[in-house]
Image 1 (tube, rainbow, N blue to C red):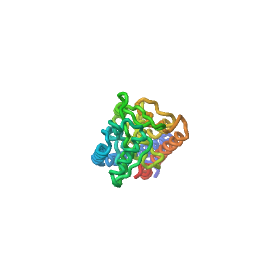
Image 2 (image 1 turned 90 degrees about the vertical axis):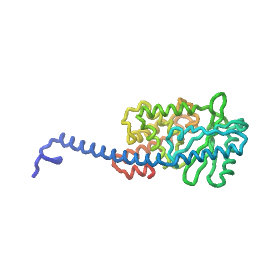
Image 3 (image 1 turned 90 degrees about the horizontal axis):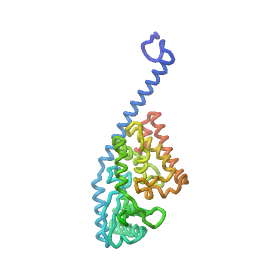
Image 4 (image 1 turned 30 degrees about the vertical axis):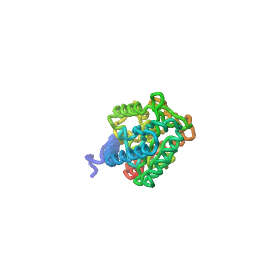
Length: 307
């Protein structure tokens, strides 16, 4: 009746029973991680399949409108997601720099933003909504795609973008930024870029006022995985990103890429109310991920991912 050949009973010692239970729990957790990895792979395949060619066509049309209407020259420099192939259509922003030369380049940032906004609003004629903020013009299309256009001028041999806190220019180095992300991605066996795509999907589920920009997510990713020695899988790296990001946002990011003034200066000094609120949001996402994995719930994970 009660032989020792199976289950957790029989003549097993408490230590043997505990080891058997631990093995069962570990095996179950590993099986769930495998399922979650397949879920992530499916999401990434969908993101990568979306039509980035259409985005490029829309950007080219915007460039043509501006050059035909304003007495200046406009070039497109993909300073963000498009250039680094981390674009998630309809989810992340497209940080595309409008490199301006000619008469308009002598204007201040506010005047340029207003001119670009009014011109596109008139010429796109209701096919897209156009709005402007402190540093960028946003063009929103009915299919959910948003193109963020950052006006850029060259001064002293360097590119400059609008500053967050004043109507002035701040120098940047987009190539250095791209190189930093490429280096960190290689250190993470190529898994950082897919992880950040997934992070952008999670970010898109937040209220608009709480969302991070594409630049900020990528900058946080470079910092969060410096010296990372964990498992190089998206299943492990995505929760790590939100845990480390919740800590990193409490202090202004050091100007290692030439982009920090554009990334998080608007959040104010260390431990500001804005930084603490953002830290709480990111920490809550990390906890939700931990709870979803602990309960081995794919439905909870899908909810986190906005599915």
